[in-house]
Image (cartoon, rainbow, N blue to C red; front, side, top):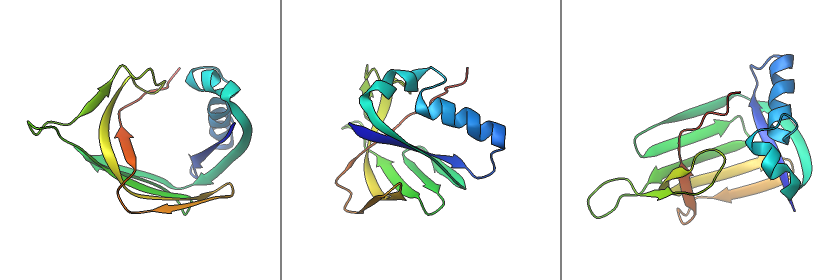
Length: 130
């Protein structure tokens, strides 16, 4: 079983941090509650300044020194963005397909650095508000 970890923006209040921890761990119900039984250990939550940037087919996210990732969407023969539909994913059932351009994760004992562009990247809007 995998370990589930989350980063929370360092501008969060104590109440927001508690609420986000409950959501990320599955304790608050919702999509993460469906995934929680598949997780062996919830490693907790770390705070960091979170920055999400992008438009069109190019997106990136950083969370302090914990996460630094970016991707670029892929297009089909007609030049339109490729999508995966009907995925059943709790965030969105339609994902744009892309390639991860860089992936650096250094949190919760995980050290991952990859910049060869060979990994899958997906992106989609989502709203987990209650």
